[in-house]
Image (cartoon, rainbow, N blue to C red; front, side):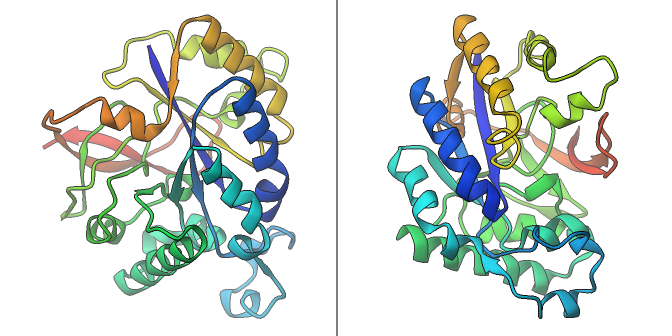
Length: 280
């Protein structure tokens, strides 16, 4: 049984505190993961930043994750993990990307690519939409920038996407498992038994294996102990924990089916998330 770890890094705190904690833990258990970085401005220091009008928010003093946290992000690459790209401005992307224009989407992805290349000295090969929020223009950008794969949606197996008439030849590797925060919203689940519920959700046969998504802010902080318990259980259960690039490499030249991307909800999450939908 195979499992991959998809790790979002979308804040200064996540990069400065969560990333080192996760790197130590992954190194201790000899596990490789896939990290996806937002490198632009971090507004998390401002309470209710998502309610502040964009023109006002852009005038606020803010640090840029890729500049302030440079050494910690480079440490991820130096440790041999996958390094990929997420949105440039994490807050704007999660708030209303579904309604953004093609020009805005292109500029956001292009800035992210430029900053990633400047930081790591190479172009990004993988993309993950923060918070599973997408629009059809993103599919065009992912193909145009030549990403090897993207991880933008929740679903069951690797596929080629279609959204509102936009087709892409960039394969999607969906997140297959609930997040720890989603599980914690259920009344009977707490941090003491959380790992048991997530491990139970893995006991099934998936075509390409499971993909578990976590954040540097949460699993690298308050939920680090829970994540460590999961690693111990997965390794004890003879799971192969691989990076997403390794998981993707396992499919070889096998043809992929094309599926629509739709919108749906999951327990513990109030927003609609991008979902793998019907086959075409």
